[in-house]
Image (cartoon, rainbow, N blue to C red):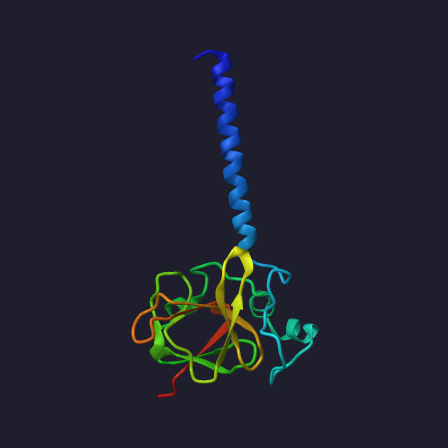
Amino acid sequence: MTDLSNRKLNRRALLGATGVAGVLAVAGAMWRSSASATTAAAPGKFEVQKTDAEWRRVLTPDQYAVLRQSATERPGSSPLVDEHRKGTFVCAGCDLALFSSATKFESGTGWPSFWQPLPNAVIETEDTSYFMVRTAVSCRRCGGHLGHVFNDGPKPTGLRYCMNGVALKFKPAVA
């Protein structure tokens, strides 16, 4: 090749790599949403209410980002994905029982997934962030954002409650 064609090839490679890097940067930024993207809790009053400063004191930074700012943890980062003991998954913000281990299943998504919440445990609201329509799932007691529900789960409900593990705590069943 001539020197000129090598420069064009290098320029194309550089532009292509820059484009890929830009797409990855945007995707990474979207992975952890900010408070301005969506609100963490459904509108309204909740049994457990705290000031922003109080929430920051009682939650870890990752819990705060998910529960109060609707962030999303990285897939596969939660030890609760591999939790298989009998027990109950509770809200990390207020300890409300949310899901029975009997409804947990392996979705392969990298997040703890359940086919049904416990009765009167969660509220569902429309989430239109990131140019799509999804159903957000929040704790009905404190309003903390837990994750989203999708229509691609197993029987008997056909639902997949895809929850952020950092928004949950596991309480093993007492023998």
